[in-house]
Length: 333
Image 1 (tube, one colour):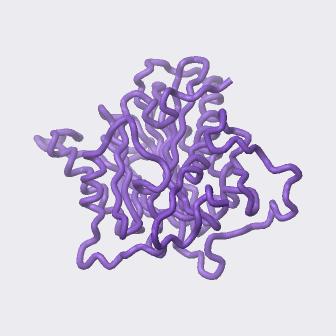
Image 2: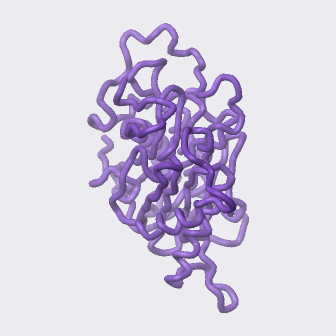
Image 3: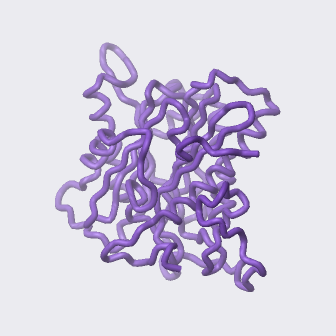
């Protein structure tokens, strides 16, 4: 039986810290995942409308093996500036990839679209995301807030506010897996318009309400409901990180990212649409010292998908209301 880590957060994976920053009037923010030491990483993109920085280097055939941080940001393409702020914070500390006497922090990033969420985006000449990224890096710790914080501040899903979610699990072999996700999906995370989460079968305890599936299932459970019916283009994206303390190669980290996308499919209906930029970064700190047999990687992948599904539901479950919101929060249903 799976059990959560002590915090039920991605930071239960040793070697990781998370920091959030946000602008309340902006209704947008940044989440930075900092690695205590260079960490094996990869990525898998399955959405049709991604916005990214430094993802090509994460492919297994490319040279750089490890990263120093990963950034999840609101702001659409403007939010890619957040990685520059995190990079600046790391460079001040001398953290990065050493090359010809220089130190270059390696900071891949992904963004979600939250420009049309009721927030004030009249920021003038330059967007605020570089400074928000720097602030998020300074706030990095093993404890952090879920819901309407960081990259989840202005997130929306069908009929509800989205949010920042996280969860963890410890496997019987001692390996820890953690997920972190900013949920801004075009689709729905609940069964029809009920309070019941699609991720219900994977819930541990009552971490997102303990409601299970509705019984009987609503007649419209299979109806495809979208966040914005008229013009869905560019209005969504769920971005995430799956992490483990297992010892993985870069290619194995890629497979972990692939498997974790099962969590999107289990928790969001529909997911991976042409108008979502659904993406998962994978991080392997290796802190456990445990290498896996091929058979054990099956359990790792299954647990990654389940943990990601739980993190998605927890992000919505934790969202809080704010002035000017377009959609209500889950707790109001």
